[in-house]
Image 1 (cartoon, rainbow, N blue to C red):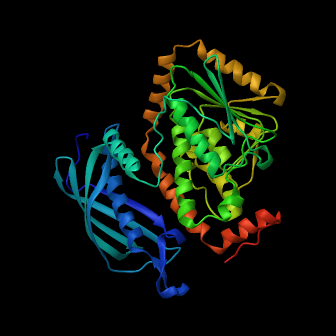
Image 2: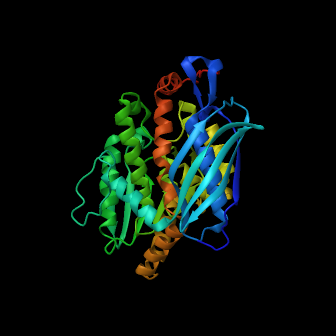
Image 3: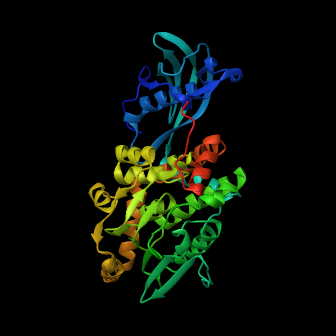
Length: 405
């Protein structure tokens, strides 16, 4: 932690109260107010802002204690402020007096303590918790045999593995079976980093991957849908973290989970026919995972455009945004991917692996675990009537009629 932190220093944060920050009391719409958890978050984040200028690279502050009174209400659309003032510094632990206001009116007060920690250690702890979570599969490297598959084709030759998503009649949509088979493939690749130096991923037929299998999701209980979403998030995170350079050869639509699969790779070569989209909003829910990765790649504004409209972008627009590395003709796509893979084989293997690891390490792993928040938001919306309408409209191939309230 840098020097200069003093008692009396303050941090301040201003929010506009929206629907995600409220609670409706007694089921009465007129009794919708700024919730206590949101108010506590506002005050905690204002304390975090006070500490931010004094953190060294690789440090972060985490909340360890909070005691708050909620003394007033704020309504949707109002502006609320959190103010945190340092009242005690004990080594790497800092205590704050925190207050929240709606305009000039105090709505909350209390005490909050934060600790400054090393991000590397925090990430290790979070990773350990994820490994202990029964409902999320941890992809451990497999140095054994690959086995046979139905929804994926894997060919390995000359230290290059080509992985083809193989449900062409369903535009290579990812169902539970493909999820399980891809988990096995990624685990095998992680366990064969010496034998397989580069990985190329593409789709059979005219599509790269149309996303999640919506028809299958329609029949899943919510808990099963949560488990599947977390497994898929873990899968694509493991794909991103493979030691080998991974090239996506995007031969057609890459929508939803297919778009996440593409941008979890290190390169994205695309044919002129390729399109990219995060269309979940049109089905009635937000993306279940991958928002942090997309934001890191194309920026917040373009992520909002893709995720809030659900509209596809062309391969040319994807190239302009940095979502795609290179455009080639469909006939040349796999040849170009092969040529890139062969160029990478000429470079020192361990240097490639370490460089990739360092890029991801410098980026930080903590934002990647936000897929748990993504999944909970997805599940919340999946249980609503709009999601049922979105699924019905998808199956019936008609425009959805969502609740406009």
